[in-house]
Image (cartoon, rainbow, N blue to C red; front, side, top):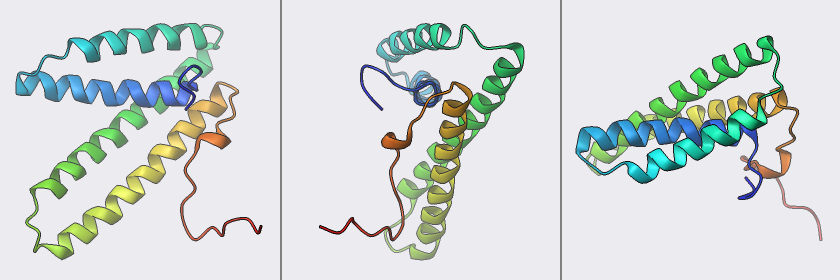
Length: 137
């Protein structure tokens, strides 16, 4: 994500994460003013970036935003489960690690779909996983 020019997918992803921070912050009695201010900024950017969307594109944006919200909430919960495990609980930790990897793959796919919807190319902003070999010198 470029700090000055985030993609629509990155903005929606950040918005969903902020919603989780605000929700959990309220429950914990934490001051959420900074997150709320950032959320308002993101909403402003998203509104301007999607102003020309058709009704069909808006419907897809809403569906993909909901998908991303669900994925990020699942990631939040899985990471909380990891933190709660004792160090000796290797099998549950391994299962959670696999779950987190799958959720992160789903998250990246949702961000890509949002970027495609907005006609944006985010190929240079994605992490490359797996056994990809470095380019030859």
